[in-house]
Length: 235
Length: 237
Image 1 (spheres, rainbow over the protein chains, first blue to last red):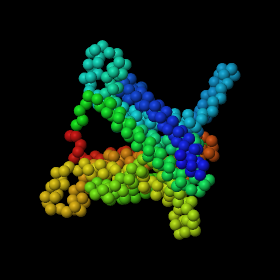
Image 2: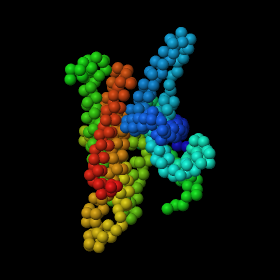
Image 3: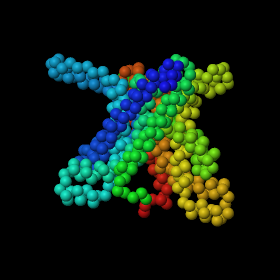
Image 4: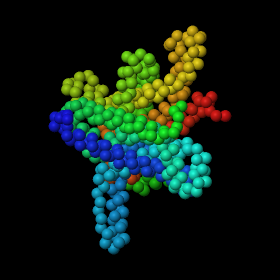
């Protein structure tokens, strides 16, 4: 284990925070992406409009601005809500929740990348042959069964490259949470660099961790690709 | 006009001072993004040609550059240049301090290197997609490598690269928000100042988000026009 003038263990714990943040937020993004893609194709006009607004606005605004809006604004919105609840319930319900940086980071990054995932999944759903869905319906499957047994497994093959790209970008976006105060790898390295006056000693290993994470997940996606490409012939 | 002025008078946050602050931020963002894209574009063309070389000694260093700069967060790259250069002993006495005194140039260098790495890979893809027949035809005409590259390969590669490059432009616009973390007052920096002064996160950040959205749509519109013009021969009829 690298000692890094005694900062080694602290930066290592920061790396764990970065990984946890990335994994939890990609899960939220995955679910939001699926919901968004289904909403974009639904017959319900309201659902389509909401999904389109969601992807357009989120993808048009910088991550950092959204992160600050949700982090700084989220607490105020939440406090206003709990205050209203307090008076509305005749001063019976009195809750105060401090939104911590980790939760804010996970929710924000998940919410942002949900929009990108929506576009990825939408394209992948369109790539599934329509006859397959009709065949599923002809077998008497419910809408959910068609989704779970036919659409999802085939859609994933087309979605994987896009998911892989989104994941790589998401991993790098997690560095931004250091700006709103979460003690991730980047923030701890910055503090260490400022107090020791040796920035390269700390930033180069941190950059190395990002590169390593990218390389490992690239390999992971190659394995997944093999799995979801079962039954198709490589062109 | 009077209605607009009345609206400005009516609220506490958007007065002429803060709007002026936003305006300066907008100028900084546009300048920073435009300059880094322009310089990055100029650097990336020779790099992309080197990247497609079959000689490993030429190809490999460029691959390493793009791999490292695309594989690490821009924030780290910015911090490394901003803190790294300013903390080198003796730089504050040297002539280079004129350049690195303000955060602007370290930030511009980080952005240029980052966008150059992405653009190089975009151009590499476009160059490699050149139909083999075109190059064979050029060879049959007796063109040497230089003429082939400047007359045949690059012009068509630039056209093919436009859709991917428009994404890179928008990515750069959004990435420029992190300039505010190294004391630069860009759009995001202005929003942070105004948030801090009035403790009004919704007004300050939603307003700036709307401006970014407008710039994004403008860029998309311009590139759509450009694509319609330059890629007309590829469109379905």
